[in-house]
Length: 115
Image 1 (cartoon, rainbow, N blue to C red):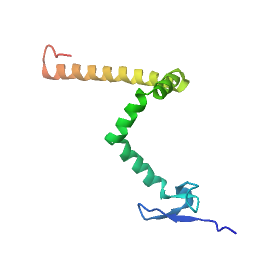
Image 2 (image 1 turned 45 degrees about the vertical axis):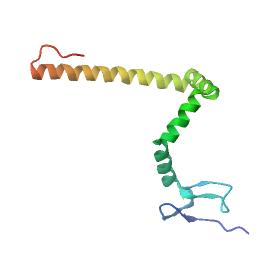
Image 3 (image 1 turned 30 degrees about the vertical axis):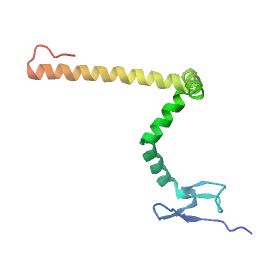
């Protein structure tokens, strides 16, 4: 009869954590990855900052599959909501920059500040 695993030690941080802190993986004997979720998240964040990842993203975005995915996403409700939020934040950013420039003009007594 198989023994139920309750805890496991992460190979990166060397901490013993509950099994719920590990992703499942059928290729491992116990059925779980040997790196905890928080360490894996850190690894992914670091990788996404590398030139290798950015180049791979550019290649994918230029491929037919990437273009089709972007077209599908842009038509989806999520894509529309994202674009709307971006446009609103862009406008609010422009307004806040304008207010900052006006405040600088008032404080410095300058007649005109180039935009």
